[in-house]
Image (cartoon, rainbow, N blue to C red):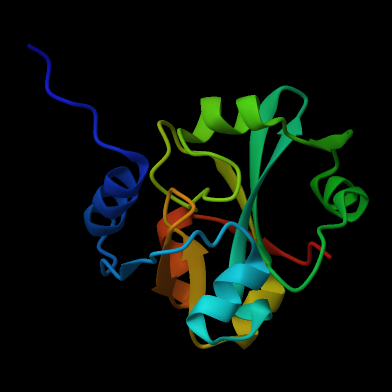
Length: 158
């Protein structure tokens, strides 16, 4: 009999610890699928919430870690990358590449490493909160540590 496949939060926890980051995952009784809901539950500024947004870049996933207080300017990001059109990925695309559902996507814990960009405006916050793989879980981390564990490219994305 095959061993059970760990759930998305367990995969995020495993990724955090294997990358040398602290396991700071908090599980809430209620769902926190949006930046506003997460900020309200945590009592923090919505700008300190790190949205993990998956985009479709010519059929390949592009993960943008962006402040919950703003929208990603995909035209600006495409120009900086020197590439064509970046489109918001479908929920099926997101699940296929991350193993996590939209609204709970974490910066880590995916089946394969994703090309990742990090919104440089997040550096203004000493503590960031990011999704931990489902709609009820978040983890805290510093900007420098998030950049390190994701190997993200820093850039303005809004």
